[in-house]
Image 1 (tube, helix red, strand yellow):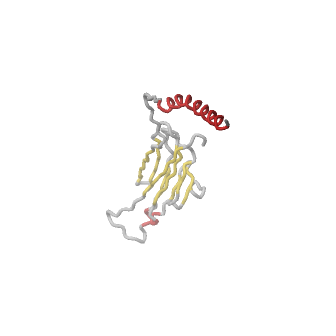
Image 2 (cartoon, helix red, strand yellow; image 1 turned 90 degrees about the horizontal axis):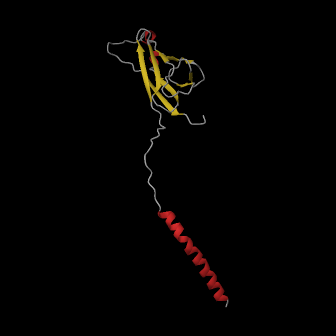
Image 3 (cartoon, rainbow, N blue to C red; image 1 turned 45 degrees about the vertical axis):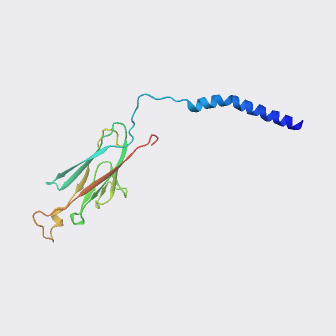
Length: 160
């Protein structure tokens, strides 16, 4: 008798589970195709403009946020040969040491404000000292000294 009750109880459980299989099977086999699409770009798109003024011996650098929707934070660095004694300054640009201007051009300078889409940074200036650089050396026509400027940008998050 006891075996009959266990068997009937198991049979009832199997039947109840069997009734719900149809609903579960229809859930797993149902598909819907979405129509249309939208592309979201969260990558920053920036460009740099460098101009050299030979009369003032100064390189002027501006960074532009080309993105339509992504604001960015920007920082820049100039690699100046030691012989040129480069100096760097710019309005709203802050050096690694917290200074607004630096006699050591080879450090990172961060732009204080978030660069909005379509906006430009204030210029950062790299002053080069050619007069003192070649006092004790012999310069030849065609000699080159490269001043390389690099920059980085980082998209600003929603809660920043």
